Length: 356
Image (cartoon, rainbow, N blue to C red; front, side, top):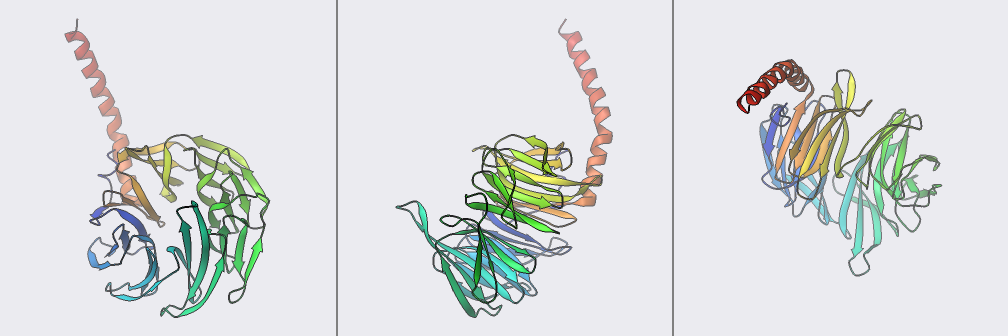
């Protein structure tokens, strides 16, 4: 099956894609390296285009507001018409945003090129109308922000490592993890969460180490009984109930997400980059079997809901696959496969006769 021709929708941002936000059962927002933001409705029609001052790294919709990070700024765009409502410059780069209750939390960091390290980070709390409520500065950079158990959690780098969560206004409670290594990523599931570390350890919300992988963890996606992790050596590991059920090796993984079900099994979507070519893989999450694969340009962003998967590429293209259409195309491809195999076998016999 031609994987990209089977996409339900393909659109162009007009510049390298750096952020996607797919609304459950609704539209799609995309942001780019040069600050372009576009909105498409559920049918794929372009609604509006907006412009922010720098590369967009995160998009998140809350009600009629679309929040974004763009270079040094955090911004709010009207989700209905694309008007930029407000924008605030932070101290250093605007790394991430999280919406929780009635607050927008933004993380910023200052990087020292000479020392090749982060000097200072901060968590900023804004109201939805752009009013700054407080700033909490820290030496550690929060590499990941999660919502769990009605709290906001920050996975930290050095010197403290571990994680911190907000208790009340501007009160941060730090918890050490058994793994004394920077937290690089994290993921939540119904009853808990996991953090991935630079040394390959995986911690739970108590700080205990639940597993140790063979190299640093770049991406992690958790579910009730386990997780899928992409490692810095290019491996993708699936672990269920403390058991490694499958591993695939390859080039470095740039995107990873659990997508819609196919044949009643969840799918894993991952993009790899060799340095010159990208590869998109779709796998059965239970067995690791590759369902479909295709070459492409470099993948920069992924967003999923229960029925769709959206992927943004460095060449500006955005591809959206829809569950029912994907299943129809896969079934049609399987039916055609035996005919193609018979045709290929006949062609081989004819070539053998000609070569005598």
